[in-house]
Length: 523
Image (cartoon, rainbow, N blue to C red; front, side, top):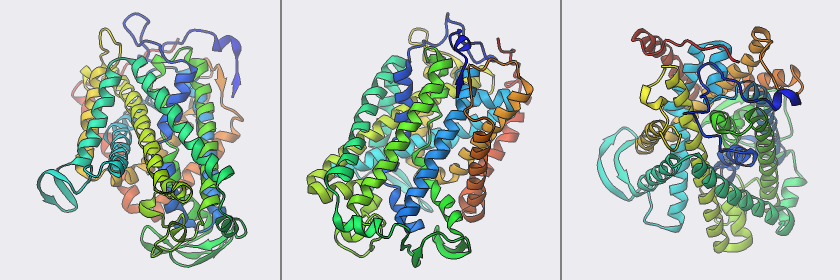
């Protein structure tokens, strides 16, 4: 990114009906540190402690495991650097919704907000809250999915009732929703404390694995055979540009190694997602033209480095290749760590059961902080939609004293709680990864559209290495979505259908007179 100092120092411009005047609007209470903490806190949840097991089963070698995380880091950082230009040019509450509305039109903004509310944001909140409850169950056996308080019946794979696991998950959502209703500074304080705690926990994990407790057997197995290993289907040796038989999502298919890497990105990209949440809160960031782009760059870069070092720590302590029938932690390796809890397995090798308990507590902190960041940011998008008359009017109102979108927080919390009870949130997240990147692709395309359509727009930050970096990001993201369509149609088809259903909903809403959008020109 390049910076125009004069533009960066100017007050924020009003963007198309989404930015409030000083009187009666949002309170700008988030500085650079808090903004960066929201980026990092929204990214770091439970994924980094778990998904490397599934990735290892897919790719089969230490080299390809690290390749997946390197490609994830590149895509995440590149996307953040591109978003920096949009965030600086349009520092308005709603973030990505505003960028899509301004570049491609109200329909695309609505489709993003529609999908975000139904699945992307609320589904992620539900899933991370359930992960929080699961690790609570490691410490309190009473918290369990098999401990039903009410069980009314079954419909296919879905159980209708409330168990203690769901109760704890819903309780965490309710508590964090309430705290964020107290004001943005309260939400930011919670975010800063828990993000600092989980970054320290992740740093401790890295310190143990990389510098203190290297396992000579694991090091020899992983680094002397860096590009060789074994998947569930058979042995793997290095890269292959011709077709190989591999097991993908329970089915044996013919894929190249590069294709397999893109399929394996599902878990790592999900673990690195939600970095864009800071753009949703732009109306509450001090000096947003400077602080939002910087927080995007700093937050994603720091988390990317931590994730790469965490996987290096895993490889230093546990062999990647393992056996599902083994009884020891070392024998199961990274591939078959119990319940895929790779971090817990790694720490238990070094510190025993006490270490596993400490790791469980660290993951609890991580999940709690991640949920807070998602709750804080998501309601701002629905607020911006309501201001454009594309969502319920009450959601577009701020609390008279605390200046937060109280009704948006409540509606978001209720829907996330219902997803916790549905029992289908994991499937919803798999469905939505295609949709998440579809909107990332559209937003980066919007960057090009705005450069052409509105060259006069103030751009205190410009995307780094434009147009090369945005083009590289688009190529990687399109390749990812295409591979998902090819090999995981049962997930991506549902995600695409969810987006398309939003088209008639948009026109119906406007036909009913609720969504006549009349954006004002930006200052």
